[in-house]
Amino acid sequence: MKIGVIGTGYVGIVTAAGLAEFGHRVVGTDKDADKIAKCARGVAPLYEPGLEELLHRNLESGRLTFTADVDGAIRESDVVFVCVGTPQDEGGRADMSQIEEVARAIAGNLTGYKLIVEKSTVPVRTSAWIKRVITLHSKSAQEFDIASNPEFLREGAAVGDFLRPDRIVIGVETDKARDLLCRIYERFAERLLITNIDTAELIKHASNSFLALKISYVNMIADICERTDADVEQVALGMGLDPRIGRDFLRAGIGYGGSCFPKDVKALVKIGEDLGVKMNLLRETERINQDRTPAFVEKVKRALWILKDKTIGVLGLAFKPETDDVREATSIRIIQELRREGAVLRLYDPKAMDNMRLVFPADERLVYCSDAYAVAERANAVLLVTEWEEFKALDFGRLRERMANPILIDGRNLFDPAEVRRRGFEYFSVGRK
Ligand code: UDX
Image 1: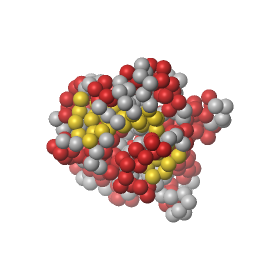
Image 2 (image 1 turned 90 degrees about the vertical axis):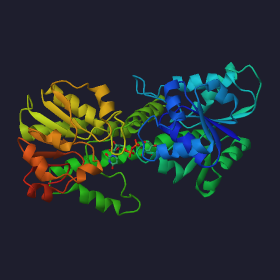
Image 3 (image 1 turned 60 degrees about the vertical axis):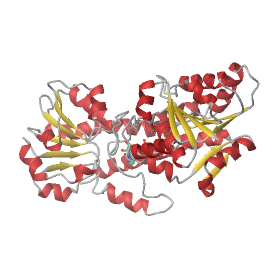
Image 4 (image 1 turned 120 degrees about the vertical axis):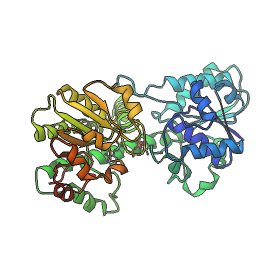
């Protein structure tokens, strides 16, 4: 069996390399020839721990190849994983034009039976559309099946998530499709959940939206904590010790970002409302998340009063640690608001500075720094926006001596309040005294 993977974004590149690691013959393809050239040399098109090693190993074994010839890759594959982007359109719905384009390409290259597997996050009922597009555009009467196999990988932990999944959801409508996918994921037989296609598609949106809901929930509780003597870290711990609630995704902070949660919550709201379902619970989840930025900037103002011409250092730009991704990063909204207030910004991130330069090019009021200590230079306050491991080990003495005012505003509750205050900082965090 030969597997084709269309799209070499996060999901695609990890899927291609991961399936090869399972021992399958895989061809990865993308219409972006530069990306394909990089992949073929073993250079990952994005930063992800462990990905380049995985690429190298499987390129060397010959199980993994790459080609910019999308049509050719489809023709030579028995199973085609669709991993192209489904970005958000202006109305908050998922823009399905890349999926449609791939469906037409598949229709033009249906040389024999093929199983088409949706891996991109798509609205429920997408498979029916893919099927229709292929049927409309295909000149041959070749048989094909559609399946859904949503990807649950987290950026920064994507390789481990793919190689050691907690569940594999497979949505199928024929025995043939089910058997093929069971063979592909043979080694995880006990972790397979086999459903119909609509169910599999919905599991992905429902899971991501539920995690986002948990985050907004704990952020709402953090707001109560800030107005009382309660401590959100302990409230979250106390809640999380109940196995029905669980401890994960109860970290209060400045809200969720990234390429999935903001987009998927909005998309599920649209999916539900288009079907006549009231989606107020998720609308509120999103609103709470949006409100985190003004609330955080308000904290900066409470510490500094007027922000105009104040120098503010920002530690962390990526939407979370261990990634260079700044898509929908909270840092972007914070920087926008601080600039609107007239602040001078000094920024640093271990991995995401190149991507952030594309969003905010450097100028005399926005400087990219070489490290955390350079960020602190003459700063009236330093903000912790992404909880990178290296910030945990900061030398507070070195930081403090560079700052105009030793004020630290921690948006991720990374530091111990007592310790930071002992080091002479005025310290503000989220939902803690
Ligand atoms: C998420 C899902 O976890 C993954 O299963 C899905 O496939 C894609 O979407 P990802 O976007 O990579 O993965 O990151 P994740 O680790 O889930 O974090 C998302 C955002 O939530 C980050 O901005 C993070 O800072 C924030 N977050 C997470 C919190 O604010 N609090 C938490 O407790 C957890």
